[in-house]
Length: 270
Image (cartoon, rainbow, N blue to C red; front, side):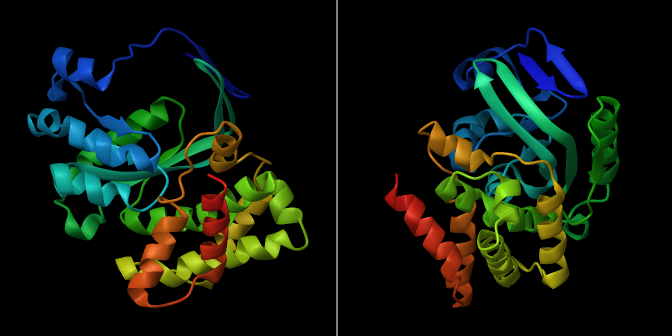
C-alpha cells in the first residue's frame, strides 16, 4: 500500500484478507478495534456476513463512513456498548491505481460512543480515550465527541451540500462554492439537512449550516467521493446521503425539493 500526502508518505506491505478468509484465520478478539471504512451501501452486507464472528467477541467497532445510518445498523447487530461513531474531516483521498492513494488535507478524526455519552456506560469512555490517544500517536489529529450523532449530522450537511451537486456538474468543492449560482444551491442543500435532523432527535440551526458552509468554502479544492465514483462508473452513495435526508423529510412531512431534485437527476443517470 502506498499513500501519498504532503506531510506523510507510506509505502509498505499490509495484511489483507477477504471476509471469508478473515473469519477462518482470525478471531474477533484478536483485534483491539475494528474500523469500518466502506461506502454506506455495503454496511448491511458486511455486518450480516460478520454477525456470527462479531458475536463471538467483545471488540469495539468503529464506523468511519459517510451518512447517519451506519451506526444504528451496527448497534442493532452488536449492541450500543460496542458501537463507536466516527467521521473523518478535512480530508480528500482517492485511489489513483491499485494500492496507491493520493490524499489532501489534515485528516482529522472525531469519534465517540454511540449515539452519545448520555446513553452509554461511563466505563466505555476510558477505552475511547485510549483509542483517541493511539490515533494521535499515529499522527492523525483525533478528538472524542460526547455527542457523535450530532457531529455525524453536521458532516451530512457538507456531504449533502456538495457531493451530489459535484457529481452532477463535474466541479470540485472550490468551484462549486465559488460559483455565483451553484454556491446558493450548495447552501440550500445544507439547509435541508438541518431541517430534517430533528427526526433523529438532533437539533441543527443556522449556525451549524453557516459553519459547515464556511468550512467547505475555505478548504482545499477537492473532488468529492461521489464525483469520483461517477467518473469511474461505480455505485453512488445516494442512499447514505440524499436518501437519509429524503427519508427523514418524509417522516416529518416536510419538503426538501433541492435534495429531491439532485437525487432524482443522479438516479436517472445511473
